[in-house]
Length: 269
Ligand SMILES: [Zn+2]
Image 1 (cartoon, protein in one colour):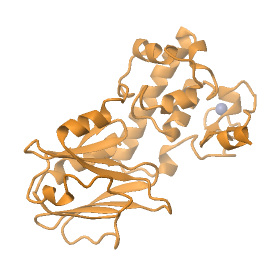
Image 2: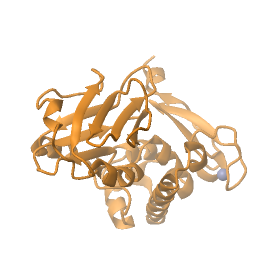
Image 3: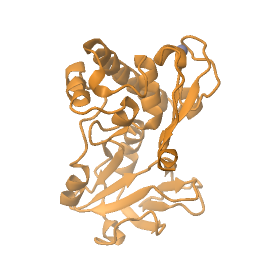
Image 4: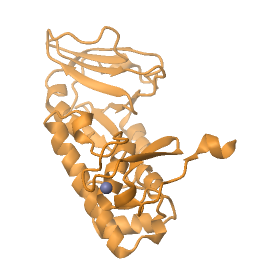
């Protein structure tokens, strides 16, 4: 998300908005203020809180908030550059450039909200501190406040903002910690490893994204089932947990143990 923000900051603020929309009915989550209120205004740039991108208008009256969820993608098109035929959402700028959101998924989950600054502040209020830049002491305070499985805790935006399921996999592998480890059981040394892995992996991801690297090249553990662990060569394993598939190395992270399926659907059966 931070890489997207940096990429979009300058282009979105270069020209006033000529046309706001069209928007897919499932993508636009608000109707008041109407989207057309954006027309004629200029954006101040791109900001980020956790996984949300915020585009405030430079008159300070409106904020466009975008959450891409899993499958949403944003693209900035220069004047004359062709884009998707039916984007889920589009903004056209004076001069002909465009910002388009596409979502290649049957179920539309990405969202766009047009909010007042007060509404936008309320939307992001519940988010925890940004993951990138957390010290071991800060992270220790967060993980010890509650006893949770690490993979689930890292993905919880109310505790720490900015880590999704892919980076939870990468971070736990780098920290050599089990995704199922209970947060309260971590030793000081393990908390330090987790903080170092969080900063190291997110910084690595940011750098690769800025260079335009694909998911394939960016991730080393996520979605690498059966491929050799880049540290020890053991095939990467997967396990279903809650609504997510976790990828991990049984040698590096769980002392050779294979983790058991803890899907919600299975537990409820
Ligand atoms: Zn390994």
